[in-house]
Image 1: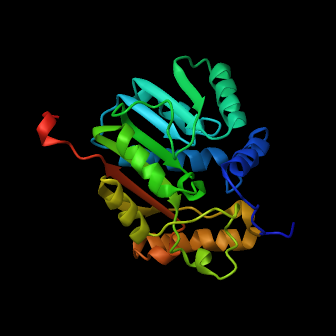
Image 2 (image 1 turned 120 degrees about the vertical axis):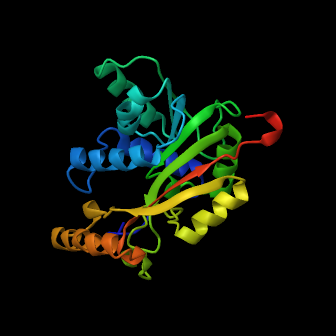
Image 3 (image 1 turned 90 degrees about the vertical axis):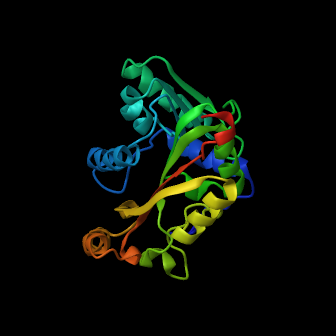
Length: 251
């Protein structure tokens, strides 16, 4: 397969197989892994402001690095992933770090099977939404499982980033991948019955897919993009949406 040619996807089984194959050696290739994790956690912590710390559900938890880092902040922690191999890696990581009481199981974002209605305080998606083929179904399920006042926190690539707007779509890993811009996020949130609390941009450059010099240059452009608020220079999009409280039930 030629470089930058997306992996063909016919159905969800192809997506599952792709991530199963990655699970054995899965790691962050876009920079220093620990430094990037700290940056994302700081961003997530800011978005968590004002949310209840009861149940955390991470959708597309992968090997569980975000879930384990956030575990001390929540009473109950649940991680799901479409890939059984990723879930097994996450279980291994939990055992190696001495964590018990973290629930991990296989499920898709479009069904959230095994997650009860109105049971989640915070749903987290990091680098996942772009890989979900049926985003409307996923948002409908999020509306179902979030408690009234519960929040979705999502970090995803920004489709308006100038690097992603080139015709040959070099960013596409799977043929089913779709990046979102701010307008599409607002539309999805509104159609699902959630309310958008905040929408911002974050520093994400796919350096693992780029020559070193080009990756460095795109990273450098993020700084003027941040301070001058130029969304076309920001590689990542982040947002927080909540399930409205229903006055009728007193919550």
